[in-house]
Image 1 (tube, rainbow, N blue to C red):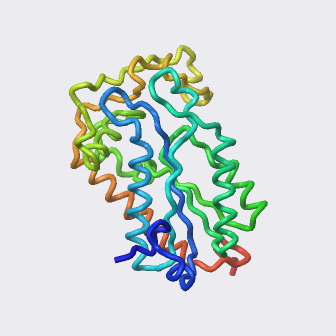
Image 2 (image 1 turned 30 degrees about the horizontal axis):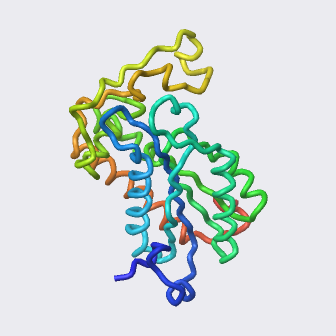
Image 3 (image 1 turned 180 degrees about the vertical axis):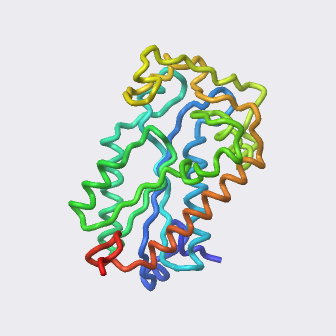
Length: 259
């Protein structure tokens, strides 16, 4: 059966009769994740979440469209390890802008970015696109969607290539996970209190932060944990997509109207 929510699977005959309301664009990255996870981790899990969310939302609205994932992300701070592929945020923004403009040409004014890489920052672009193009841009960092349930599923918070990402990988592509090669994810602590407390910020050069390109211990990861978190996240994103597709764009959108 042709999946009409998948732009790469549908055709002109079907697309010409369908009025899509929401375009979904996954954006990932290609970068090292300790020694045991694939370089395509961020691209793979982001694409999976976006596609499964669209598939789940489709029966409820029949007007969401999943676009092919953009594979590369902002990885200038991981270039000390092989084989990070870095593109500038401005390059990413330019690509997203052109994709959004194409969708707008066909009447799609609701645009959802499913982001799967912490180095990508689309907040300024979302503001600018809405001002320039008469579209509404929503950014979903998918790994944050279930944060309220995170502590119930995973033993401890982590950051990069730890128990969370390893669990997701074990749930989705266990054949690519080489746990026997994994380091412990140990990192160096900031020397400044302001940075340790989090009220000052700096970019982390991972070659100075870690010897493994990691910031989290994968010990305790399991496919069951990964599957539970993925199910939670995909369900919530699908709900949002269906609700967004059904909502008319009026003078107050996306806010509630005054009574």
